[in-house]
Length: 184
Image 1 (cartoon, helix red, strand yellow):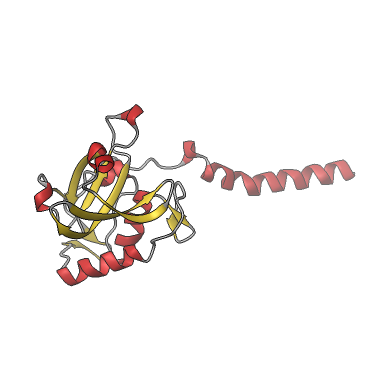
Image 2: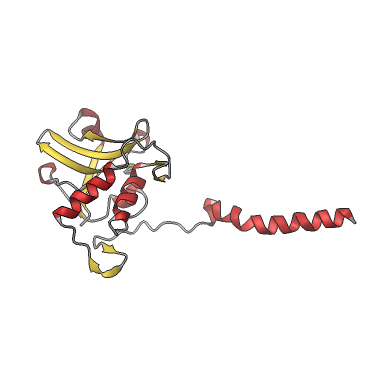
């Protein structure tokens, strides 16, 4: 009799846990769409294009800077740890703007900024840092400050140093720079 009861409990536990296990398995998750659009919308008003004023750009930068020092964590999107695209996702979400989750998807979002001289605070910058996969963007950040033509600062989540600001105009970052986008 104990065997039957134990077996029944085991089945009930398995039935209760199975959906959680399947939900956490990548095979059973919905795949993120690789399609992106250049028209951005705030979730509270899906039909209205996003218009971000200079005051809102300043707020966006202030929000992102609150994360400086947060450690890097793959897939992270909060103050416990975050990756580069998670930093952008969390920052823009606080402003009511939904960005795609992955850096490669974010790199198609908004309008392209073709010339570094035309970059503005709030623009997104993208890089290919994985030399083994040179065809795909794998790192992202946001322009925070332009002090001059050789001093363009961006915030990002460094895999070795966490969330920080760096000068885009450096040998390393210019060596892996891919594109820039204006998301608003």
